[in-house]
Length: 223
Image 1 (cartoon, rainbow, N blue to C red):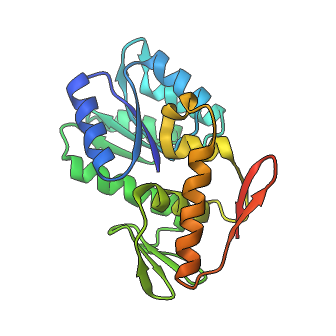
Image 2 (image 1 turned 90 degrees about the vertical axis):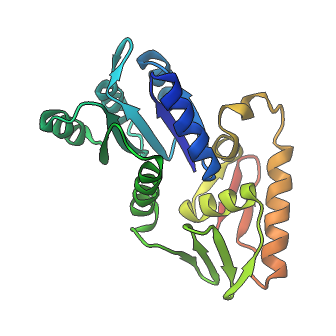
């Protein structure tokens, strides 16, 4: 899953990024209001972690911009401000959760995972699609109740496909989801073909169906 961390304090921003990347997330960062607005205008995210107090503007205005763009991203506010007014303002604008600084990174991770489950999988602790079962807490994937081993990118690809089942997903959307900003320098989508080929092979070898369908000239459809 792809996250945007909007935080102006460098040490906290880097700590959050390193911790969440270790948990398997693709993380991008913005250090101020202007950078945050550029990011949310150019890219799509599964979840955005936003501080309220930012240079050049407010995290609340970032939320307003996200709602104007009709973004489907989950939004968690992190702030040193613990007033009821700030919490209500953020939640009324469309934020999904509010975490007061200081906080444990493990708690932020738990809230992000809970939010993503609510938004993408109706709050379930496991994700099922016919013979496929995914347990996000342990990143376990079962096909016909037998565990299969996927790389980190293959796992992210499968979860993304199931979250967007029966929809056409473009190659650029897949690349952005798996690699964040770095995909802009890739020059081709060969790396996507390789990961899809390997994921498909492992699913078939485990007795699963081939749900990944190519939509020529556009991308893929799962289901």
